[in-house]
Length: 114
Image 1 (cartoon, one colour):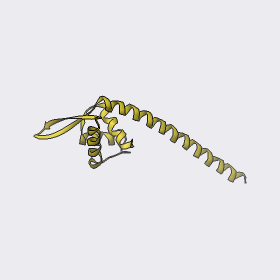
Image 2 (cartoon, helix red, strand yellow):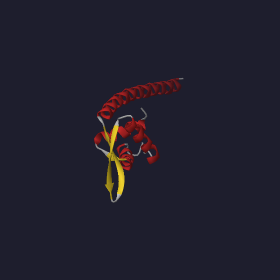
Image 3 (cartoon, rainbow, N blue to C red):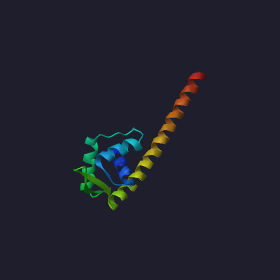
Image 4 (tube, rainbow, N blue to C red):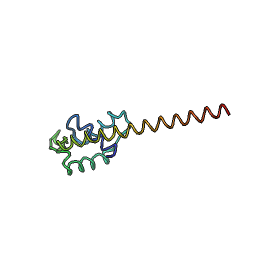
């Protein structure tokens, strides 16, 4: 699962939201690191709804209709699976970083002593 899809599930795991709210919540929760556009988020919401990960209801606000998306049980389960997968990936990245830093430190010490 892509990171942007993960963050969409993540913010919807907290509470139901309409599409633009999802865009704002992802940007805020990632401190701007992941700031998807509406053009990115709406296809993801449609894909997740078609797959049964989200349900939607329509509400009228100031005379305009908007869809509010909520995770289904299947969506909550998918989020939990994604959390575990991303934690595994994070562990791998941290290990790679440590290896790279150790290799870099080894090169620096060899260049000073040689």
